[in-house]
Length: 280
Picture 1 (cartoon, one colour):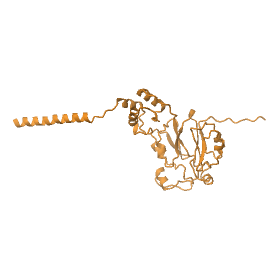
Picture 2: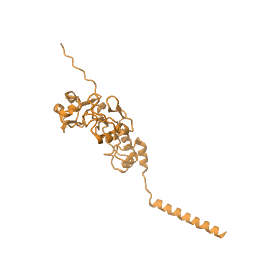
Picture 3: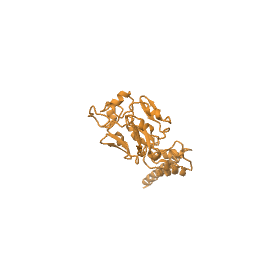
Picture 4: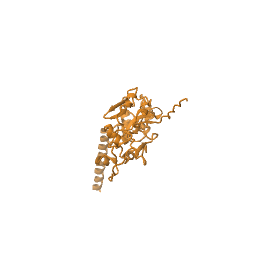
């Protein structure tokens, strides 16, 4: 009987000692978490897309709480509305950021780019781009296998079966940037959404010489410099046989659009221009 009682006392003592060790260890290595981090997480859209530059919404929430200023911190998915709520919660000020949206800089549809061969491998842009230039003479253009559509968490980009080009749904696009990373041809770019969602950009990335580019695609940029000359705001530059429109300088006057002989410059969401009627 004494042996059993002694065993119980010993085991009880060991258990009590273990509890004490665990208690003091928990206090010693306790990690304090600001309760405001949970508050910020509840404000965020929980997309966990990483577009903010942090590993998910929890990482972004922690960064906003630890930072003395919200400058340089922005949630593309939630936009200015979410950032305003975060600023109010933290008692800080936040500047408004111009909303961005993805654009596809390729207009090489089946009609504009002829097919000269047929790819019979794995139907992914990543693999196809590593094997060869593509089914058309333009080695810069869209491969058409939809890697960008597969990574979009918001169903904001889909392939057009007729043109074999990706199309952006402006109402769903959150500018998370996943499609940009997924495109091996670097055809997708984030640009300012613009007033009334109006944008102008060069829908081409072909850097070949004009004669080669024109032969590869009917609507390729041929670096003729007509757009550059007509722009009054110095928003267009020509480098490596390719025109590019700086959306920080562009004033959406649309002069370059009508000047482009190959229709390589796209205008989105503008009202249709009324044709002038000459008096007879």
